[in-house]
Amino acid sequence: MRSDGRVARITEVISASPKSFEDAVLVGFKRASKTLRGITGMKVKDYRCKVEDGKIVEFRVTLEVLFILES
Image (cartoon, rainbow, N blue to C red):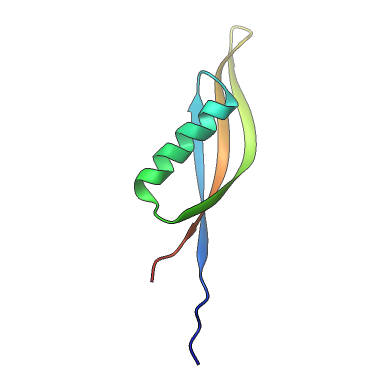
């Protein structure tokens, strides 16, 4: 019996941007795309900010990147 099922993996990526949460997600996705092939989705697991002198200076996200394992 032959199985044509797919197997996926989730890798956690933490990324940051001085601009916005949306930009932090894009930064993380672009970096993950350089080394992970077969990305099929992402989940934003956590949002955080770095604060200095009463101002937000960096937006941080933790991403779960879902990709299909190659045969």
